[in-house]
Amino acid sequence: MAQPSPVKDEIKNCIQDISGSNQISCRNALRTLEQSICPQLDGQNALLLLKGNTHIRALDEILLAVISSNEHSETCRERASTCLKAFLERAGSTSTTIPQENQELHDYTQKLIILFSPIFTKRFASQSKVGGKYKPVEEAEEIRLLLVQIMVVLVQILDSEKDTIEEMKDGVEPAVASICH
Image (cartoon, rainbow, N blue to C red; front, side, top):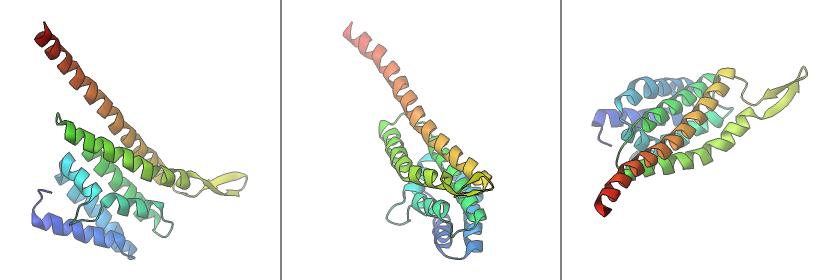
């Protein structure tokens, strides 16, 4: 990542705090990631941070662990969901003409859907029946809405990839036709 060292250190500290057991530190680190770090990143660096590398643990795995855990507070689960959505939107906002970067985003999005779908399903599953109504595992309506919004962003990234391929194809066909005639 082409970020200055203080930002890298701040990211590492945030990841450490999110992974720790202190709920207040986790909440504050998630807020910092969403409000201070994510807006500074371009799409490629947001994607790299989500995927992780040899120097920084994959942020997506950490956020998914918080989202899927009943051990974390509702506030932490909500902030983790908001943070994941923000990073995905940032990563998906970069439309590039470099096929390798588009393919990397597409492959990553497919991988994340596979990781996210069981969590999504689990958080909406009924855990009990209270007063004649089924009660989902994720009781917070705001978090359930964020989970749906995350799924929408993932699908939009895959859909935009299809549009980018079509646009590239439309640009190549006339060029090939002019060469052949």
